Length: 178
Image 1 (cartoon, rainbow, N blue to C red):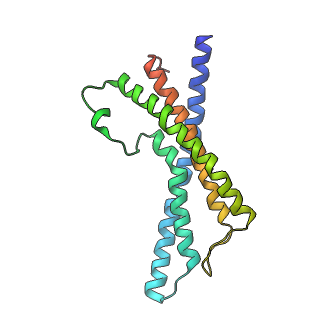
Image 2 (cartoon, rainbow, N blue to C red):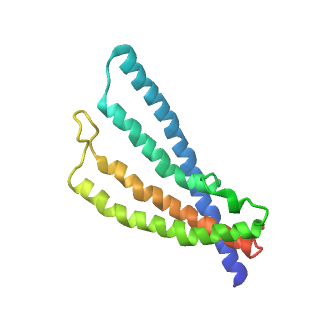
Image 3 (cartoon, one colour):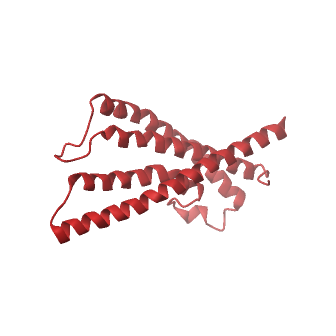
């Protein structure tokens, strides 16, 4: 029974990390799109004195999507900013770091993700029901699409947090092989 549960949790971690890797790589293409869009917008404004509110809004929409959809990928690769005074100190071994990751994920990351997901639904619903668009003339319609990325992004982060906690638990239990 114990080995079956362990194997199931390893498979779950692999499945979640596969999703995270795929969404992270897909999101990275948004960065390229954003850079090209910004270059075009700047060229149009400074060379031809022609700007577009919709293009500027699309730039910050893409910027928001990169951060929201890329957060789980960043967590998977352990590239989030953290205070490393304790984490990277000589007093903390690999098992101690696993405890920090496990407890930090359970006490802070997962509850925060759930809170944001729950809080985002009314925000998204109201935007959809009222047909919210840009308040600026020439801006983008359907603002609810961007707001939908909030629960999606935090849902991905929640999933990766579960994988991170399970991986840390495997290390704590000395079962992180295979």
